[in-house]
Structure formats: C-alpha cells, structure tokens
Image 1 (cartoon, rainbow, N blue to C red):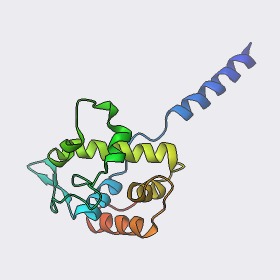
Image 2 (image 1 turned 60 degrees about the vertical axis):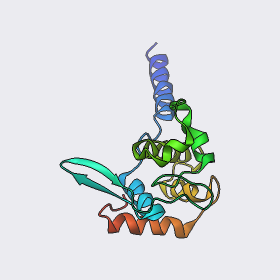
Image 3 (image 1 turned 90 degrees about the vertical axis):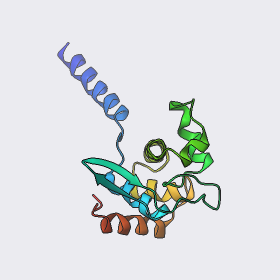
Length: 150
C-alpha cells in the first residue's frame, strides 16, 4: 500500500508541476518592452508606480497603448475581461499592461517553449517568428532603465 501511495504522490507531483507554469512576467521584460515600443517607462510618484506613456501613437499595423498591442494579440487573451474593447487599450494603460502580461504569459507557456527570450521575440513578430535584434534592444533598454535581465 505504501508503494501505491508514493507512486500516486509522485504522479500528483508531476501533474501539479505541469499545472504550475510561469505565472508572472519578469519586470525586466515589461520595462524593456515598454521602452522599446514607445520610449515609455515605469515611474514611481508618491510611492505609487505609474506608466509614463511617452510616444502616444498608433502603430503602423494599428497597435495601441504604450505596449503597442496588436488586435490579434488582444483577441488571443481578452476573454478574461470580455466587457473591454480593443480601443480601450489606447486610453487605459493599466488595462494595456494586463493584456501585455497575459499575452506574454500565453507566449511563454504555449508557444515559446518556456523561454523569456523567445516570448519577447514572439511578442514582436508573432508566435514562431524570432526577432533577435528586438530581444537585444529590449534587454538593453531594460538594463538602461535599471532592470537587469535575470
């Protein structure tokens, strides 16, 4: 009976390990993408962190927000807030940040083979499209902003 219990625990442990994939985007990834996409940054004012959205433009392919989120990326992860619209990304940067994080986590967990370098590159080019120079720029801008890659 002990052997069956141990085997069950081992199997349960493997199932739990598979279920507990990455749940947080590293801070350097968010800060680097923010700086790369729109020259924006995180800033603490009176102890509260804010997104300072510098280059408030719509991207060439219709991307919105400081994180330059495409409609396709938004569509992939917006189900958690079905009452929100794509255009909300242009005016609500906290919502945009949540969408960017969800999309990055989706890329990391589902198509980037659990690699932040791949997830960051896919964020720019789409799943399966590696953009090495984009990743290098994100890392450099994150470091410059004081968030080293871990």
